Length: 187
Image (tube, rainbow, N blue to C red; front, side, top):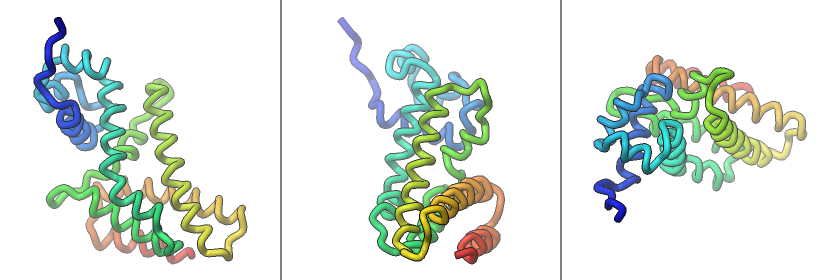
């Protein structure tokens, strides 16, 4: 007879997500996950298969939490202003107490190399393209941009978002406000 789980998967994944978000994928060990999640390695492997499986579930949890601001951007009819609001909303989203944790996706992407897990790379790519598509949709509301310019500006904004996510871990609010202001001065 199978043993009943003594934990709720959503709760332990939330804990794992926060650990990956804070420490990064590579630095987070199975021992750290075991301690943070409050379950043993056997349970981790039984539920998620591997550290990669825990991370992929954590990434799904992160995307779900981020929906608070991605849905706002998705439903925005404010063009460039809606995108700029997303940048500021992200800063609020990524803040924990007085610290900003950046973006789980960006933090992980900064660790990638040619040996990185294919599934993780693919999920990061899918997520990044989704956000880029939201930027594209909002830029298209401006009506004055050619298809080529829409694509160029969408690329510019997703790269700028990666920059903001990384910078948010180091720089203060005034510096980040100047960064965002200068990004949107180009429009």
